[in-house]
Length: 442
Image 1 (cartoon, rainbow, N blue to C red):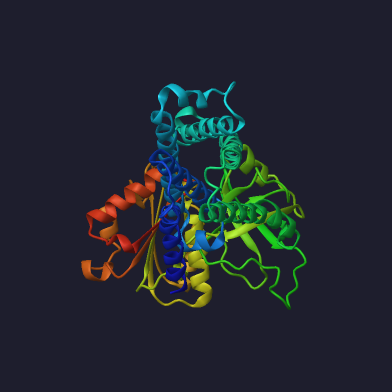
Image 2 (cartoon, rainbow, N blue to C red):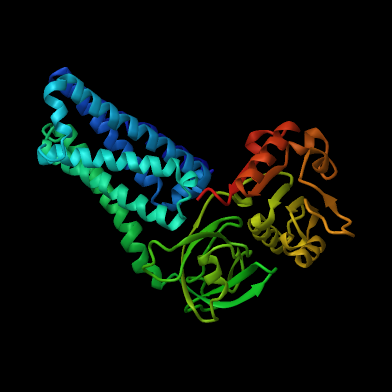
């Protein structure tokens, strides 16, 4: 119930955000051109504030809406922001094209208009790099740094434009709204970029060990620093299935990466992250020595069994997408859960089928059915072959009525998750019973 309330509160806030400026402008008398441009400008500022809030890793947001929904909201707000800014520019220029086109001149325009043009150009580049990131094959770290620089330029230019032009701050209502937006934005950014790193000393962890799972996958085992068995103060309390951002330096603000917590809740506060070493950063994690200090920002996400009530779970994993499923199953086993659960995990080769021995142990502790399948089976493979499909699901699912009382958790690549959603739609599973986590969306 708490999660539903939090979700409803945030959705209401985002819907109300662009409406407040329109209400404030009621009764303000000015030329139509000025009224429309001011309304569009305030709406754009509100959208810009909303986009930054969504991307600020507020835990109530990530837990209430989930990361996938937040990414969708962030993209939607970004497109609305771009549309409002372009409409604002169009209204100003078209009101008197011969005179106002000079506002776009970066050399001769006034400082306020120059700031607006720079802010608009930065916003356009921001949108283009976000939409075309994969097509341009931009490395994630390069794109992220560019994203932050362009965002800062957009915000700074917009703020200077508002202050220097004085169109939004000459009325009490709009001035109060502008100051409130800037104040709230400063607080959020200070918490995100300054306060959390300063408090990282308390949330620090040390590497206890690294356990190989396959040729290119290993599990990073972390223990909280200053841990005392008499107190769980230093432990990271999380719901099974959530994730955390991991960085190797307290102030490594541009070098943190998200990883799912694979361990269940443990009395000693130990955390495990199972990582496939496919890039420089993940390869570095695989070479960390015991005792190395690391820092976590989390937990985040709503992909968890703790948020659902059902007669059982169906867990569908692609490769290393099994990591949140292991967290769920480990936790359920520790809790003595008696419900029937099904795990179907798909991989190309045997190396993609992780935790085989532990799953056998979990089958003895839980009412658990495990179906591994390979798309490129080796000679002598006796298990299922091919991708998870409706026919394979029918071998483990109950009848149509009872299967609709189960919750379905999907995790893996974007193509895997989208394929599983289509398959579940085909067999009539209600969308509200389907919960997803895509590893390539962050």
